[in-house]
Length: 135
Length: 135
DNA sequence: GGTTGACCCTGTAGGGACTACAGGGTCCAG
DNA sequence: CTGGACCCTGTAGTCCCTACAGGGTCAACC
Image (cartoon, rainbow over all chains, first blue to last red; front, side, top):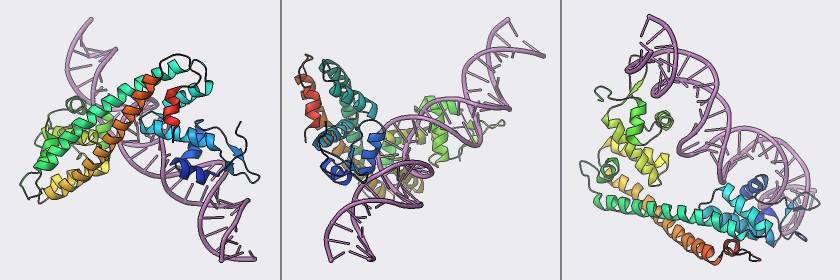
């Protein structure tokens, strides 16, 4: 379906923000389809590959594991009544993102308070260390 | 300085919320000092070890790498003019936490919108996939 | 007092998600 | 026609655990 490759792996890497080695790793792991090859064996990619790769990167940034991304991509590839399933996967992930958000906010407050208390002077005990060592 | 050990590694694990294997790993990595040993070779820990371990766990939860935690602990161990340095390490970490927070909030919005748009019907294209595949 | 069964020990291997070589081939600009 | 940037495969390393395997120890129960 990918008509004729447009760019090499290095260019795709630049376009997608995913490292060359990581792209090859994703191919090994079945997240990216084996691309067309030039006469000399170079991987040749088209715009579909860029979209897919960006999707993978974004999903990773959203905290999906590679396995979850794989499932999401499988759903997208099937393209039939898959929306409900994708929604399920995504809703679960949304719950986890919200949990992470809450954790991070709590951490931010704690660290911010600790850094503020630690005025930079040469106090006998560092409040930052104290703050984190507390039960 | 640790007078006489109070508890075994399993109890310490329960008290600190850090797994037994992980405690031993931290010892190998130099984050926890080699504890006293019972006659039969069991690791015996005191309250200081619990505090230190809780500190490590908290710092990890705050997103510090083991290496950063090691540096923080070194500073705490030295106990002389270390406050400023600890503050530097922590401030850097705070910046990264805030970056992560911003990212997560963006992700939460995107995913939330995508899940909402993806009404569960059998649409020709799944908006969730579309949302993340966009440039 | 003998035997479970839960705990502890060391050491090594596995996992997830990359990341970095090593040892080679290709392509193109000067 | 040569230098340097790119590409290939395959393997090994990183980080931070986590899970064995193969054994010793300890407390309790019968």
